[in-house]
Image (cartoon, rainbow, N blue to C red; front, top):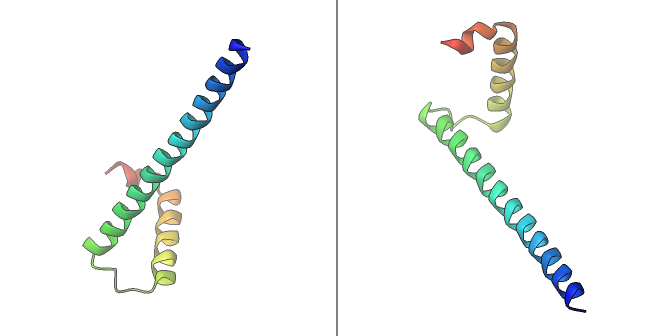
Length: 73
């Protein structure tokens, strides 16, 4: 009986650890997104429509893919 309780406690701890890890990952992602938004604001592009910004970012990605040495500078 004691072994069953211990196993249940270990299982509950694993579940809580997983929940805490997901929360930490979500907070890290949120922080990264806020930082990216801050860069858009610093570049004074925050007045542009989101679809325009998205298109510009896709264009930048294509340029960096075609010219990977640009990233080294």
